[in-house]
Image (tube, rainbow, N blue to C red; front, top):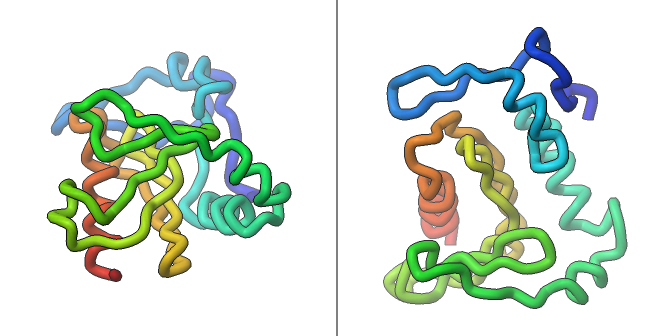
Length: 150
């Protein structure tokens, strides 16, 4: 992961972010988010991380099973469940008109970035919408991607 870093000041490169069509710039705020996902990366580096994370190359995958105590989030965030530090999104329920199968595991950020794994198809969905206006957009997008590959 040669292109991943934590910005520390206003002069570090931070990709453009938008709230609707309005460009939002607050580099010092992003630089202060180090512990809560304030890193800057590329899709290629994020894909390398995702593959290593879910395959057990970073740590024993039995740890994920031990942490897998998923809790439903508030009603407005259905069908997302959370546990072990990541999201789980079942694809076979009402949110997919019972047409989906399996689940997505991963996470989405407030800026529209996302990293999800679809274990049933061994697919990784990595991307960034660079958009604050609709925090649910990456989730819906990845669910749609999974549905068309299922």
